[in-house]
Length: 320
Image (tube, rainbow, N blue to C red; front, side):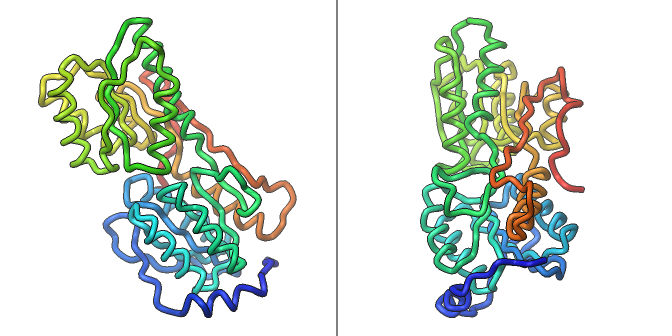
């Protein structure tokens, strides 16, 4: 497969150095190395170690193997400085392209500049930049729409009544800010947000936040939680406080999340398949590098609002 390579690549690699890349696995598995031995080499810089990120890593690795591409992975652990360091290390490995699940959209400017100076194109997952001229492409999840879909469910369920809503956000920056912004913007005027605190995409932290939230707001009607892992912990905290009637809406569409919608622990969730994101990212990156016709620079990931009424429509979330 022909790959366009920049003459600046060798210079950039020498500037970064050839220090060994410490590869952080996207879960509790420890370090992760290259997968497959194809003619295209990809670097995947993951943003964290939540279930979403674990599934995304699996999808990227599986699709890279299917595309006869070699992939190296690194985990930024929700730290923008680590993300930039991971990108520098990938450049030192002389990868043909970078796939980046950023920890913070504000960090992307420096990331993109670093990669561009080295002649290494970046493909983004989940988010896109306002100016896409400097990136190879993106597999975009409309995170504001995700939040808006959950807010729309609350509007329909509340049916015009005055209701009180709590928000358990993720970590400040990138995904969480877009999710929460979309949710708040789409809430009806009859819905009042009475609490908004970050759970840091950490179930233990989210449970503490929920315990304080329900104690301060015992008349809470709904809660929006920025991912399902936190939502399960929030449900536990609410139930322990006797607030079983608080309805929780969330994000991801994991197998566990769909089961929670089915049994009523969650009222709704928005499925945005990590499997689909990873497959799209690798296929598009390889196709765009090869300048194949018909490969879109921007790919929109399908979203499905999942309730008890349509659980069968939820897409597969994580690779097997």
